[in-house]
Length: 527
Image 1 (tube, one colour):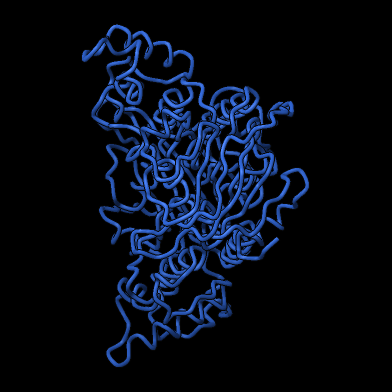
Image 2: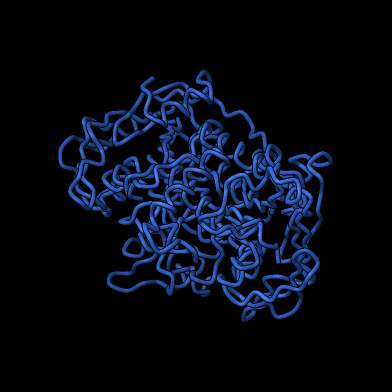
């Protein structure tokens, strides 16, 4: 569809964009017309039309469940539409598989990278290339990786094993893999969710270079600030339908949020009064924790969370956050060190002991760790309390009390569900998170351990969860907030510690620290 220049073989020269004849070729263009896709009981895409031009970054916004992922899966050949058509450069494209998508010049960089960790970068990229040559194929691939890396600012060592790379380097490898397969239309799914601010800025520079060379980029993100910074146009989906496409020059955050959720969203949270409670909700002293491979994941960490404050822990994924949270919530043993709450020491106590000590846990993996999917909404809401009154009568459960409590939580927390007896697995991600929050916060805990509480959630659900955490803070609870979203950390936290390779790089006041300084600490520079 794109002509010879779009599908480079490994041996082709590197100066294709300096050829005047090639520069005269019109940039690629993708058109999606009236795409409809239904699943049992759900219309995921309802006559969606989208137009993406060459030389632009086109952002795709929408709430969880709005149909963004379904549309991209159709574009990449993972799903087949029930109706509608896809046009590339004005010609109908029948995309029945990712292989067809790649042949049409479409590449996708998923949020969770699809690289073989035990292979090198060159080996991973060679797996998807048709023409690598017979003699010394990896050398030719390595040469092309270095060449494209220099051209687009995507420097990565082609001989490095994937497990040796940082998250941002893995992302570069994924982008290079798509470009070397001939991608002229590139889909990026939540590309900055694993990056520091400096790395995100570098990625935006890469996208600028790609635009200048005529590539079309579809940028999926929940972060409105990023969309306003990097996109040229934005299309908004709500409940499977397009609510509009705007030029960024004619858009603002408030307008985009209203298009996404159908109402105004307040981005400035109300100032929260400083609570003066001279008591620690949590004290961690010289904590060491090992990961599954027997390596030190948390190394001598010490900090305290006061009652009436939100203590944020920032850092890129994989720097010990998960092991720290699990050690604090009774899910992983600590090798040494101490963990104390107001009722006493709880080092290496069980999750039940921690609950009875007034510790609430909002886990990172909401489906695997936060709920039992086949159980009903009501049953999930009392998972930690069914053995206690008013839900227990001796050895029996009072299901009337359980149902009444569930109905109260559904109303209070705005959980969108047909009823208390609906299986939890049928809820959207945002409503599963509301269910978890209702269960954990309804006991008035003294300490809330919240791991990535808004990850992957839309602007409306994020706003509600932020307000819930601030309300608990104002009521005197201590909140330990672990998040990779710097905007969230800076907005909610009173103090911030940065974790890098299992160690704390420093603890700072959120009102005084520059965003750039936090980014440097996330990359390993001590305060």
